[in-house]
Amino acid sequence: MLDLYDLLHNIQKRPAMYLGQPSISHLRAFLSGYFFSRHQLGTPETEQEKYFANFQTWIQERFKVTSSQSWDKIILFFSQDEHKALEQFFQLFDEFTKSDRHEETSVILDNSHSHS
Image (tube, rainbow, N blue to C red; front, side, top):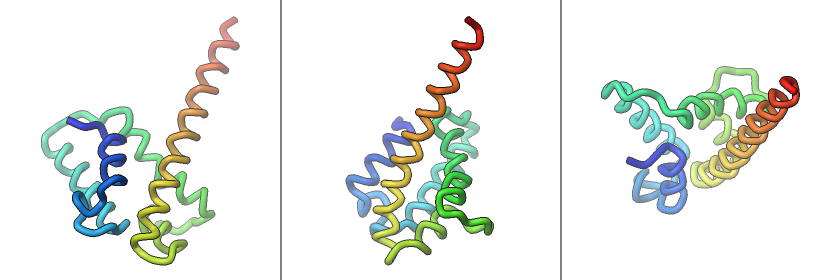
C-alpha cells in the first residue's frame, strides 16, 4: 500500500483520477475517507499521518488565521477557485514537509550537541 505522501504525490499528478475533478474540497473529502477507513480497519497511524495532523496548525499560522476553519477552507479563501486552491495545497504541503524535516533535523542536531 502507498504511504500518505506517495498517495498525495499521485493525486497531484492525476487529480481527476482520484478526486473526480481538481478541487481542494474533493481532496479534503478524499483524505477524510482515507483516514476514516484506516481508523475503521484499526490500522495504526503512520509517522506521516501523525505529522499531517500538524498541517492544520501550520496553515493557520502561515495565513495568520485564528478561526477554526479547516485547512482546505483557509487555502480556498486565499485562492481564486477550487482548482487553484488545489494547486496551492500541493505547494504549501511541499513547504510544510520541508520545514517539518528541517525542524526534525535541527532537534536531532541540538540533542546530539547537548549530550557531548
